[in-house]
Length: 82
Image 1 (cartoon, helix red, strand yellow):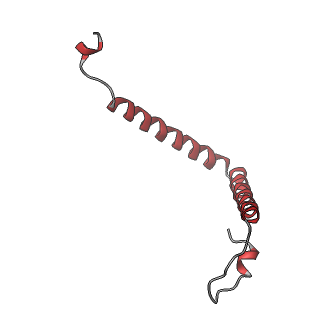
Image 2 (cartoon, one colour):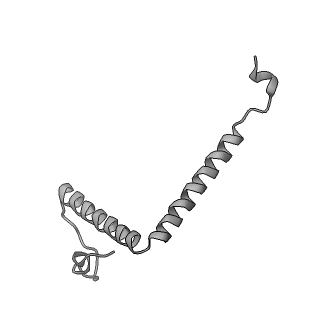
Image 3 (cartoon, helix red, strand yellow):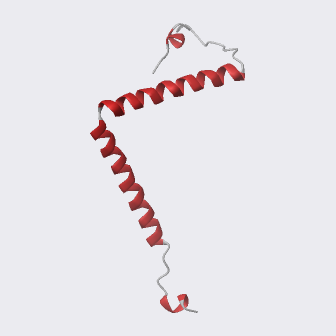
């Protein structure tokens, strides 16, 4: 999402920003809060889609972990007991 401050900078060339580190961090924190708010609003508007997305991610993460675990398994039985 674009804030109104970004639109007022103009489009005729490079804009040299003289923001301090604190101002940039504050802007980043505000942009992050805006995005989190948008995600939360979407989750409230569409709870079943949110649950389906979370479930899909969990299943994919489980499958990836299972496959990685199986690929590291040692198939030589006689060495496991010694």
